[in-house]
Image (tube, helix red, strand yellow):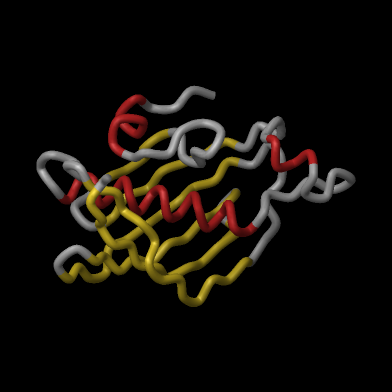
Length: 144
C-alpha cells in the first residue's frame, strides 16, 4: 500500500517507521487517518511469530504520527522548520489485539493548544472495535 504524498510531505517519519497511509477526514481540530496492516512488517518477525500482534507502542506511534499531521495543518506553512515531538503520554488503554490484515482507523482530536504544546486525545479502531485509547501531548521543537 502506498502512502499519500501529502503525509510524506508533512511529517518526518518515513517507511519503515511510518504507520499512517491515508487521510480519511480532516477538520480544524480533528483528523482521521488509516493504516492497513499487511502482515509483512518487520516487527511481526519477532513480536510473537507464532501469533503475530502489532506492538502496542507502535499503535501509540500511529496516533502520535496522526497528531503530528494534524499539527502540520494548524499552521499555514506546515510545521515550518519544526518537528512535533511527543512530550507526554497519559491513560494509554489497549483494548483489542491488532493483527496482520487489520485496517487501523486512527482518530486524533486536539483538545488544547498552549503556545508550542498541543494536547490531544487519540483512538484507534479496527472493525469499529477500540484497539487503543490514549491522551498525549506534542511539543513543536526547532529542527537542527
